[in-house]
Image 1: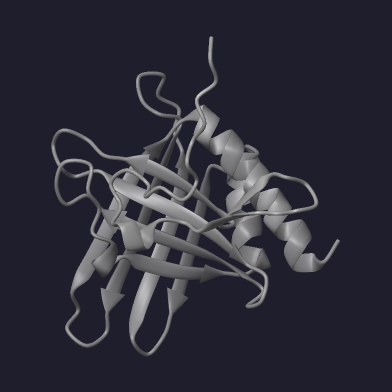
Image 2: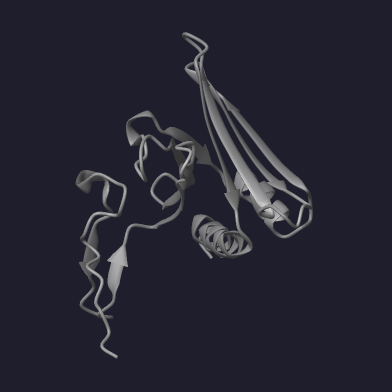
Length: 174
């Protein structure tokens, strides 16, 4: 069987070409470096799915969480995304839920422009995904509300937990 190479510079399905992560090959390792993010795509046939992206920004000493609602067949409304900037305490709360130490991580950020909330809930229903994420933003000016909710599988939660652990290490500098 022949291995098929994946073009890391190709646009991610469902995203505009300008939104695709950039890639470069490092001369020392020969591996392709991609943007430091983890994205969970959840489009559905009802058109009310969403996407959640976690991006580490060491320069700003934070993890940025972006969410966009589905707006078409496997398309997402990145122009109206919700963004939250997480520090170590926010990451710790989410990690505690992913590790089963608490059933719910509930984050709330308030600024002059908007209020943002993030919830990660552990569910005990074998017929449904074990976690559900909800992220919302309410604008202060007109009280408009945007919300994205999506289920998270055990596999996605495991990868997210590892990514968040690495983020903590990098933000602390260990």
